[in-house]
Image (cartoon, rainbow, N blue to C red; front, top):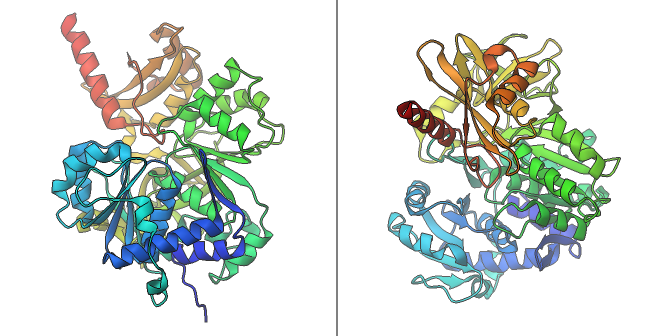
Length: 541
């Protein structure tokens, strides 16, 4: 009988016991070996336990990238509490909503965020533990410096056993509404989102006992991997955990913003082997930096150029190749906060965002009620290892997690079709799909063409109300400093690659296209911005 569970804390302890001297983490000047990190996690967990934080208590993580972020996450898991990511860009009103929705009992926060935290604490009446990272003394009443929370004996934890069913809470970005907390049991998260111990050895399949993870780590080549997005976003956190459960060294961006030159500096300095970006929003600035200063960076260590969460255009990949090692492998993955990881694939020639291989747990659902036949378009759904639902939102849970023919599925929101060979073509978020004159337009494919233009830095496409067509395709774009917006040239470019009904009717220029810290487009903002700009333009005529 296994003595360990699939708790994320137990799995990390196995990794630390297997390679204790290996570097687990590099963040700026901070380095942690697996053994060092495991010891700090145990001490912090013992302190949390002594404060009365335990099973089911939500522990908020409102922190910049740091070793302390991961230590706090794992310590919460170790005492069977529920770690929850909190976007460090949120202001007081947004924080009040999330604090109240999560019902946080403990909060770890970075020193630079203390003012925002203090303004929102009225929404967290049950909060009894506050821990601050960074220099200086905490200003909030009752707050404790992170290092002081490590000074505790660990014997009290010896009788505390973690469980497969312990919960991790992942808050969505909220770009299409209020953020929702997705409740992932640890075992479901490990197998549904983190590869089940076989992310880098797919031929071997998922592990069958927690202890088997040690053997996988011993077999794995010790790579260095860098997720470029912040840990507060699910994709970056999942990628980090995948690497830690493989015995890799994780290298994190130590800045709170995306600076392509700094990212390339990190890759070159630390000899990073694998990089994970979020679409063109990150890839294009990296390409611009390489073009401007091609001799600055030695990228010879790099052989995995990963992408997920947004489209990385084919023309951008081809433009990057001359600056990268000849054996570099571009990997496009897709997943969601509610559905986990769906797989990796490539852009299909016949259209769509990505084609992924057949998978027994992936289906396409029509009208939320039946499974699609090959050739039918519907919404991608997944069965198998799934979240329990949304924290504190039974109505939305019932809408998103459904039973079809006796099997529980999550309805992901991604429009998709099943090809004749069983592969799945995914087109983009169904709720962003534009219906113009009865024809469907997925913003991602129009955005990819627009970003081919040398005059643009970025582009987001939305549908606006139109009396004739129902909706009209509208682009919100940012123009390069050295260029001038030429709307006719952009439309001509689109006409050369897309059907006429997909070409933007209007193009609105903005100083900067608003995206999340992870590089994801904010379609709500884009739609509001386009409506205001076009209304102002019409009023001035």
